[in-house]
Amino acid sequence: MWDVRLESRAAPMTGAMDAVSLEVSGAGRGIHFVNVRFDATAITAAIDVEVLDRPACLRRPAGELWIAIFEAGAAHDGPFIVRAGDVLVWEGDEAIAVELRPIDEVPVQIAVVKLGRHDGSELRWVP
Image (cartoon, rainbow, N blue to C red; front, top):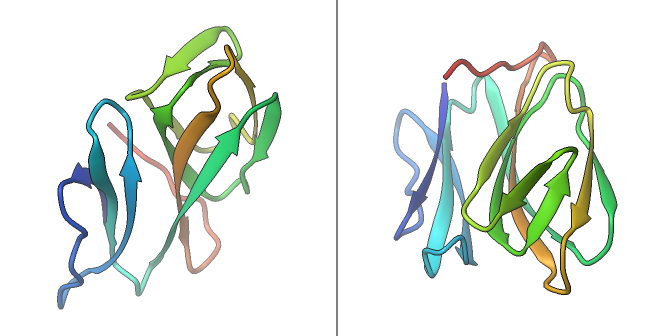
């Protein structure tokens, strides 16, 4: 029903899947695209960029699934340290409010893919 990829070009829409793309530069890859392909009859998809230069709380609606791709900087996510190139998945009833604290003077840049269902039911991810 959906997939997220880091690629060298923007994703084209096809007959079977819609697509949203965001050009970014970071994550140890240089210029690249965050591409989301999804079945628009069932799934909503958006990509936002968060730039944090001080502690922040990102609030995710409970039914949505967020994929955070750290493009630049480093931050504390609870007891964990996340750096450029790391990817986190926030879903379900955990991580509704994500507290991130930048570690140093470099702003943290995150591409956040936001996925949901049109019917409002919870979207889950199974690795």
